[in-house]
Length: 76
Image 1 (spheres, rainbow, N blue to C red):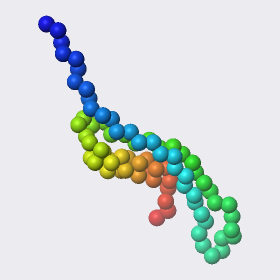
Image 2: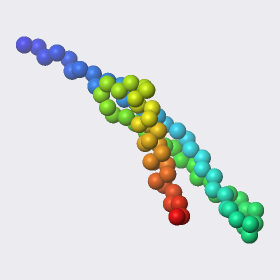
Image 3: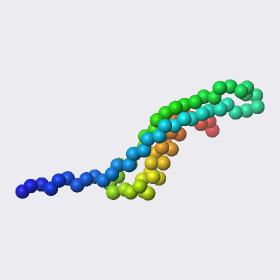
Image 4: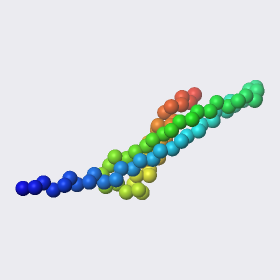
């Protein structure tokens, strides 16, 4: 007996963004200096079966937020 073709896994949501972060010194004693800039490409994806665009967008946003902010250490 012939096997049916495998069921498609459904769409994979993938989003790629080029990010430019500019860091400015802050404070009254700081002279005007060239700001530090960081360039990076960030990728976020959703690998869930039967997810539609409306469900994928919040997941992609969370993945981007975690990936980008995790690269920078913010003083407390």
